Image (cartoon, one colour):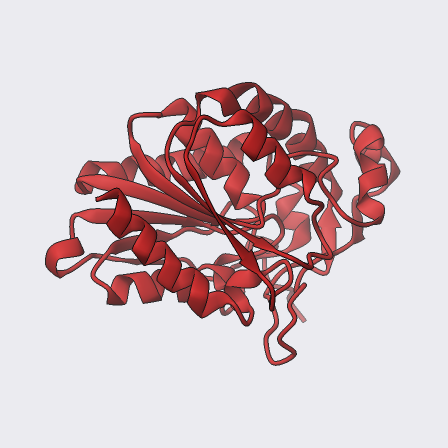
Length: 263
């Protein structure tokens, strides 16, 4: 039996983009999913925003929504490049652009805001992962070994689907692509930390009170480093993938109110 290509996108992991309508049609929203996840964690959010008239693009990061082996052929530059390109395209067809993200997608969003401080109208960040030592479980021991991991193994047990709602499941990998991890930890977080003081766009920050994937030090770094005004929301009923969890409707509605405030 012929095996499908490693880079074939799995059903349910497709990106979603749609033009806006009405008074919000000239406002664009770029949505970025998390590491080893897929657009399935951001598409419901994007569709909700589009129903309110906003132009949306919930992108699929390279190497995601396919196989973990495919992810191991990518680098952090591939991920950031895809996010930057989508942001540029959205900026070209709208009057203002908001960036909304979940987990590692927040690192890409903050990098965009740091590199284009006058172009981002605001950000909505859900359980951000922006530091190598910002994980909550056994993975925290990987940070000192990040450069050597690809020589030891190509994958590790996955962390997808940390969701309180038993009826929901994230379409993420059951294995962590170690080669991509090494690229991400070595490059993304170090460079982002240097750029965070350049971030000035307003931020709406959503944090789960119980997160089995990430530690609180991610949010602490944002609070202590960026120049942005920060509006915080506690998610008391959701775990890490809150955009698919019990608090998702609250996140969606709050993000619209946040954009209205910036107007």
